[in-house]
Image (tube, rainbow, N blue to C red; front, side, top):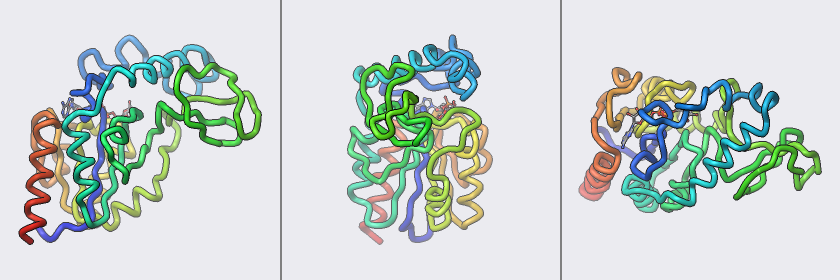
Length: 237
Ligand code: APR
């Protein structure tokens, strides 16, 4: 593999699975029992704000019961050691990457521990329950909502992600089913820009055929293995 300087790493629910955070489409996944269109859409928020707020309150509360796992810690170690550009783009709304120590991190689908004002778009760090109609500390409007990108809404910081993909030497996807765009299309963007692409996942995903290489197994095994090799190759380069 040519000299690797700039990394873009996409993570999905699979990296948090071994921390006990349910994935979305696996057995017992988050959406089971909760019809997606009932929960994560602007219409659901308008039709039944109490249900949507309750769903995210429960997920926010569950953060206190889980810890970052080996894969999160390995990525944080890479973040600290890597001299080139590195960006972890996570689809996850949990805070496990931060708690493991990752600094160069972007939440493209939002964060459970943040509240967004539907009027002025001010973001407020938020723990605990978020009642519908809570007042925005910036503009006073009673319009705080979960700071989560709902289906049909545009993910955050897409320009920054595209810019990182445009200069990436290696794009790595960890623990995602490749079922949801635009994240599922990042491998094709990376390839278009000339990056090498690697998938680390428990099973084949919808995008597996698009990667230069796919390794199957749990993130807690594959991620540290990949990072150890990457860092040792760099030292000998
Ligand atoms: N290690 C690695 N991969 C794993 C593990 C594990 N221990 N456990 C599960 N996986 C893999 C599964 O095989 C699956 O391919 O993680 C992937 C999880 O896929 P999804 O549940 O679809 O989650 P994700 O890809 O993150 O969903 C993307 O969809 O519903 C929306 O906004 C939501 O961000 C989410 C997006």
